[in-house]
Length: 272
Image (cartoon, rainbow, N blue to C red; front, side):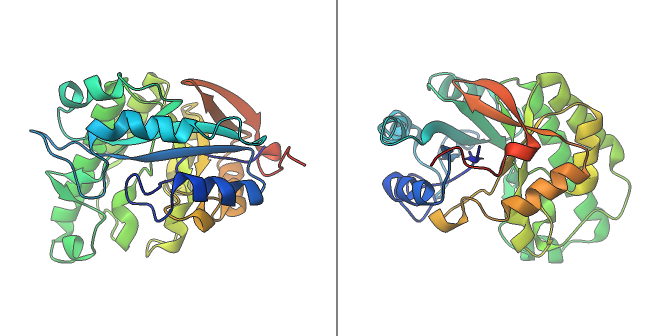
């Protein structure tokens, strides 16, 4: 069964409407199509330019769900929520008010600065300063997991996007974040979009995937597609990474319940 959950439409920063994504996914043989646009609420209020306004979230959900029953492809609705330090009180009322099939959480900002937007953010820093950003990033991931609000942890180790990686041992911060994810029951996505970036590997790395597997953290496969033709980007390569990390199943979602499908069946459409 081919399922793709982390995809963006024009409701946030995607290039296509839900209708256009739906039509492409149907032609591509997708069995389960999930849309999960950005909802980023800054501490103190306000939203990013690449996020929908929270006031539009219920209309977004209705738009996505209007495609249920149009053909045999199953439709899922989610949102990708940004996490900031001490963010639970600000975001929980929004998260818990929406009838989503799954809730994705991500960390794009460290101390209100986007860590993945530009290589310039990293090139002007010393190795020690870069390591400090990575350590703070993993601290935010831990805090996000401890909130127990979310189902999927998005693109772990995103700060490596532009090719900058830690130069010191941050195993303690990473392990604490993964332990919190395991304790929360969250699923980690293997996000294939990283293959096309300077880092040239998925999020998270194979090394981190193996740490997730050792903790019994489930996984799902994602492309983080922002245009229809990318909704299944490098899925076969991603499945190989999951297998090499020791996984034999992937998680599926509906109405915030998850079940598992053998990895061997995850690239075979059940639709004729």
